[in-house]
Length: 124
Image 1 (spheres, rainbow, N blue to C red):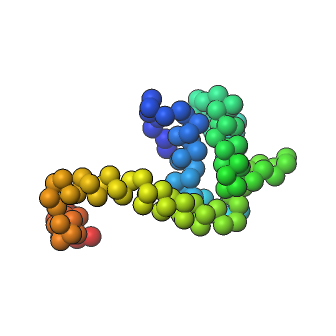
Image 2: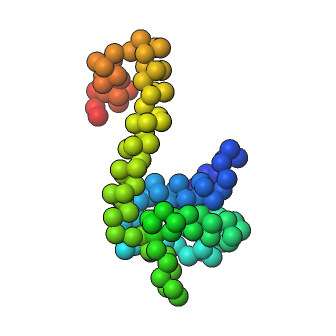
């Protein structure tokens, strides 16, 4: 789990977002264990309380579960739940701003669809 911290967002939130990203990407699947709080704290030189706060938010969101004495595990259906909520957030928060920017730049659908192919030398 490689992380580049930024100063604009609390570290616990960045860590939570990284775990969420790993769930969405399929790197963490239902039943998989999360690295221990101590392991993450040591590896990234974080306060264990910071790591615990990120993990607790994941528990509060029912994305991971605590198994007393053995650790934290990704819950069944976590990635599906995340995908649905992230899609909704994208459509309600990110897409309107993106659509407005596309309109401002005068881009059309054909130009948008062609742009990735042109940047990759004709390959997608």
